[in-house]
Image (tube, rainbow, N blue to C red; front, side, top):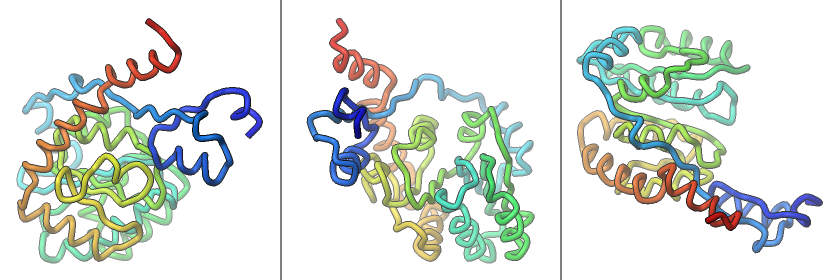
Length: 237
């Protein structure tokens, strides 16, 4: 609060700005929203490389591969995604999930995977420095967080032209318009998450979601847009 009286703050989403204003007491005119941005052009792919990545992940070309990115903390909601998988695998035996990230929840999640008999369907990858390649190899990106800002992994998934499912927390529903750019579900709701994944599995509007999300990404979340916004904030020419 003392720092906020002396300088401006940057929030990566309107949701975070609202928190700073309503809960912390920062004056609204001291908070500028500048969205995260990424280099969209970095997310080109080579078919042979993607086939190799899927193989490395234990996934055949006929499997439907879901990817989640995030450290293994309770707030990331991975347990709800794993439970949703348990509801879907009996009807969709080719369904696979990989979770890239590390953290204190690893042992608990491993135990949950074993209890739900999902060992052949869910893999915890730990820390990875090839997240871009994993995203490109996946068929669907899911972020089941209970609380969130504006995660770069969501923007990366959009750049990789993957359909996305997110929870309605933080800045994510401001990016992903439900039913237009992807699907937004309530946090900690295994059933609705499973239904959303099932709708992606059966085709639906996946291609339409991907096209709309990529268009929004290029318009509002490119690295160039972010740099221009910071230049404007600092008065740079």
